[in-house]
Length: 287
Image 1 (cartoon, rainbow, N blue to C red):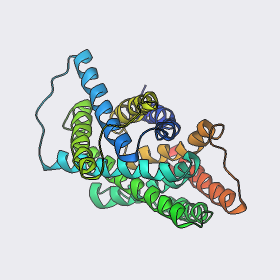
Image 2: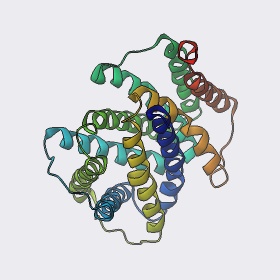
Image 3: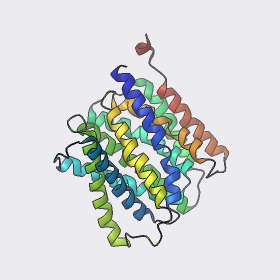
């Protein structure tokens, strides 16, 4: 198996694993506030990461510095905004809007990683932008509009976090980076939570969903992603991640059915079309 094939498989597995998390996160919000859920998500993910290091007998090297702190802070923003958007919207809508991530990721890969922008990406990016706004346009209340803004914002911060991670994983162990990422996120979220509410929930009824979410998204999915981007370009990895809304829709529609309005369907079709076009191989590379 070539390095490219290995990277593609790892990233596909990462998408399949992480797509289950919106459903788990939505269930966890039945008994936890968005801030409490964010805090426990980071702590549980850090615990899984530490346990993985112990099992693999990996050394926890000291890599604390401004880059890893920046990584943890941006990740904290992404986690909190994701839970706030899920507390207002359904997982399918959040998953579709979340595909605006690819636009942020490509722009960040160009500006921060000096990766080249291919002309063939203009059309799918335009479709993703139009589709995202079409989906967002189906919600007219102030509260739902705020949820839409949170959904767009969390995609930016996750794209920024993963871009920064790309700059770190070549020189550091992926799991060590992930551990510091989650611990710093937990510290930042914990400090903010203490200023707003009690970090201890009144009920732990939804904690099992949060544990599952933290394992699949905050640990296993990210480990697969961090390992995968060692073998393929960051932009290619994010093209693979574009299939996420389709998988989220399959996973969550049974539990959270939504009204499929013409505007929503039009936007969803455009987003899926952008995924297909981005996933289509280059003629030059195929020959």
